[in-house]
Amino acid sequence: MSGAEVFTGSFTQQEPIPEEAIEAAVAVMRTGRLHRYNTSGGELSEVAALEREFAAYTGAKYALAVASGGYAMGAALRAVGVGPGDRVLTNAFTLAPVPGAIAGVGGVPVFVGVTEALTIDLDDLEAKADQGRVLMLSHMRGHLADMDRLMQICDAAGVTVIEDCAHTMGAAWRGRMSGRDGLIGCYSVQTYKHLNAGEGGLLITDDDEVMARAILLSGSYMLYGKHGTVPPEAAFAQAKYEMPNVSGRMDNLRAAILRTQLARLDAQCAAWTQRYRVVEDGLRGTAGLTVIERPEEESFVGSSIQFLLADWTDAAVSALISRCAARGVHLKWFGGAEPEGYTSRYDSWHYAPSAALPPSDRILRAIVDMRLPLTFSLDDCALIARIVRAEVGAVWQAGAARITR
Ligand SMILES: *Cc1c(COP(=O)(O)O)cnc(C)c1O
Image (cartoon, rainbow, N blue to C red; front, side):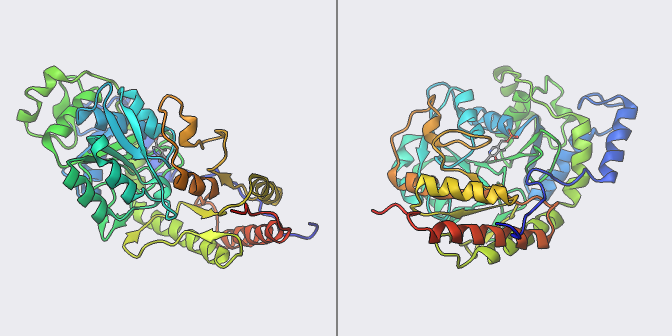
């Protein structure tokens, strides 16, 4: 491999926090008022201002800022009445905090399969729609299912949709913002998502009662009137006696750094997708590797890219991952049998036993993933694609990469 190109960037290095955001954070610290309800006079807290701005950005009536994306999902489930023993439909292909949020409220995940487009299998969803009253829909890795058909299926079956938009903040289906088709949209602002507060989450809805319950759940005490977007008092009348106070508030420091970032979100999303397209173009037409085709209706945010190594043997996938790693390209295999790093498979969540999903297992085994942080230049992205392409070629041509069926 001497003379071969090597990539030296870091797949886990995000951009620094913008100077303007740092100044906003310092200004909050100078006041000492970091708690969202610690306001002076008629002051609107940073968290409340963020809620107004995020509601405006998404077009939702209400937004609530909380401690994490996982917390937002848990609060959403509880706000629609999911409790111990209730079955909740969700994606088999997702990240551990999704079944984790369901289990956290005592719910029981019912896994729905994944397609080669890496979206929820709508035929499987239709077949299972009578098995749960709620769908926790994860737009895993930013892939949007046909949201028109999905909503038809769920509306017909009386299934309430909660969207996990951890990877689709800024994305849309036929012009509708991700998170706006379901009753509730949940977002994460953890470092690896589209806004970076270290940790944090947001929840949006148009529903008065759902938002009143979510606000109370998040730990508002009786200070809910201080929120950025507040439902009418009537929505709190019963809920304030019924909702437990499960502290999960956001603080003013994080909100301050998020507000500046939110103002730049669309430009950031475009920059991600530009990088994605460069890698995608470089990988297209590589024998043995399948590029994921993106539907025309989908405006996605390319903050990570996936491809399939369909029917490759475990040994060949492992060989490819080590060969790429030796050249500085760190691929993640979502299909690995053992949980590793951030990735795990539905069959490793033993608290949520599932029947096997053979068509999905075949796809899950094939999924390879890369993050595309904005610290990568377009040239970096072209180089990464050249390296992956060359190494796939080397493993593929060596033969025996494919399972024969
Ligand atoms: C990150 C992530 C979450 C959870 O967000 P946290 O803020 O880390 O709790 C949920 N779903 C998906 C798909 C994620 O990637």
